[in-house]
Each structure stands twice: as C-alpha cells, then as structure tokens.
Length: 134
Image (cartoon, rainbow, N blue to C red; front, top):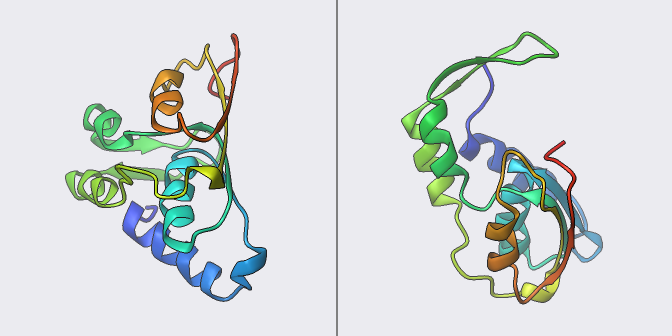
C-alpha cells in the first residue's frame, strides 16, 4: 500500500533539503500541485501548478477505502487519517503569490478550475477553455 500525504511530503522535504534551494523550482499536477503549493510556501520557491487540487480533503471524503491503480494494480487505501493529513497541509492564504504559475482548463472533469483561479487570483494564472483533468 502507498504512503499517506504526511509521509509523501516528508520524503519530498528530505529531497528538497538535499538540494541547493536557490535553484529549486517545483512542478505539480492535481494532488502534486497541492503538495507543491505547501512546499513552495514553506521553502519560498517558485512553482508551476497544472490543474492543481485546492481542497483535496473534501474530495477524498467520497473516496474512503481501497482503490486499485489502473496501471500497476497496486492497492491504495484512503483513510480518515489521510484526509486529516491533507487538511494539515492546507495553505489558506498565499504569502508569496508571485511564486506561482497556474495552468488550468475549464473542462477539468475532476477538479473545478474556479477553485484554483480564486485561490491563485494574485498569481499568474492561465485559464484555457475546454480540456480535461488528464
């Protein structure tokens, strides 16, 4: 089974701390965009986010339980603890909105692009019509 959000971010932080932070730039899509937002704020580095999740802990409520990865057949379990860990990573207000480039599509069938457009309204945000989550 895969790791939860807290463990994932812990692994990413170890990697970041091993690098020269002045040359660090993050990129994340979907849940990776949520993690990149947290890490960008913590380490004050630029981040490019593609269809980023803004409030994934709300989405995960309806996905509690086991899920099979379509490509690897690995089983991943979503728990209430995972949802709490996601809440703990939430950046309610951006302290450095200039650090973000946001790329969203209005046709995203998983995440509402308007959530990202609102959260990152003081960042460079490119909104493209149509498209999808993938």
